[in-house]
Length: 250
Image (cartoon, rainbow, N blue to C red; front, side, top):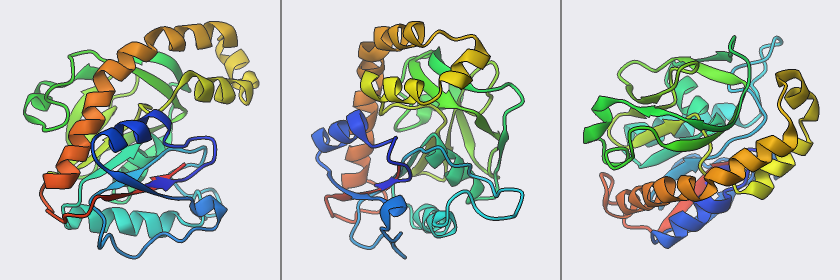
């Protein structure tokens, strides 16, 4: 797994992947870890979120120094049919690595407990086929995927943010929302973004209460989702046979 930011670790998602039979090899490039050149010996790739932008800054520099290497690894994963999951920023990087577009959303930040709507085409998807029509998710982002990569399949959407989940090829998925968070993680994000919440007119206590109220529902849907991903990693298209899962991200 790649962890892009110390504030967004694998948390509950990591526990669920381990329950599914995977061992996690968590890489932390922000702390000096090197993004590998290949996925040889790995069963899957998971890229987590972070506060960085998936697109270059005004000076043309990437959102983080390791993003070009990470995007190359994501392209190799898709070409090699290595099961891949990108969460929030990780999903955005999966899109930009394949010529999709990510921009600052004109709708403003999307924060808190929300619903997304599964598309009909998701019925046939190996991960999303068993997801309810309108599952609970946790959101915390201000950028959005405005254009999916060519050939990507849109799996879930919402009213203001059209691209909430997608599949690229037959073994790579990106989700805009967070499935890894526990309430402590949300509380830490809230305490570090009180000005953002004030601008949105969101009371931090009410935000935490609303997120806490859906934690069990989030687990009910996304825990088995994570375990389906783990099963795919162990038996899926690449048949690598390794039980180690690299996690790239925050």
